[in-house]
Image (cartoon, rainbow, N blue to C red; front, side, top):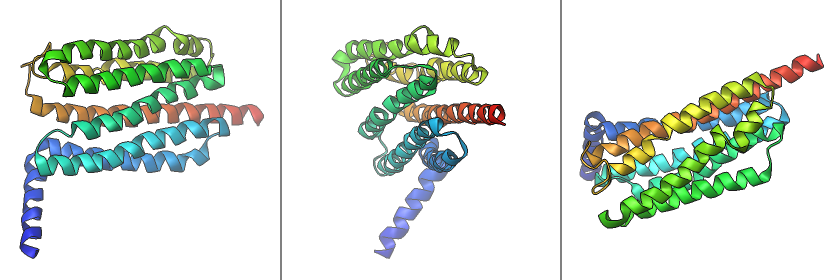
Length: 249
């Protein structure tokens, strides 16, 4: 048993030190966990109407930390992409990121119907993406188109839909800055996911780079997008809390 344990430790050391994908799984896990703790602790420093937003930010990064723990182990044991684990993570965390858009604009008049549309679009994007990624070469382009339509609807809401209108009419500099940053996350940060999908065998960008490196890009994008989303929400909550305290002083 000691011999087996030693062998496992040697293998773990080899993977951690020579495999950049394994390293990003480990860093992603630690970064998500630390961010979740930060958001949960900082809930006590903002006004009550922003506490739920920080709770959701903590849930997003906390859920991701748990999945990254298991995805790291799966990858180190098999050397293959943990596709199922990743889509379970996205199915839980991406709708919660849509909830963040709603909570961000709720103090300025957002309606529940907007939240419903965002969540439905995210579910369509993820479910069809998973079907396309696991159903084989023959149909992944078709399912990719359906998935992209869900993504484009979210982009529309943020740039020209209800979310954009509420942000524009809020007269809140903090919210305006936050929406600017979130637009960058949506257009640049989230774009890595459809690009990663399109490099799969038989898809539009097949052969552009090795499929085995997709997890490296996904891991980095996940950490930047999920933690970055939370930090943007946190900055608005802190700024609005400070403004309210100043008004009451």
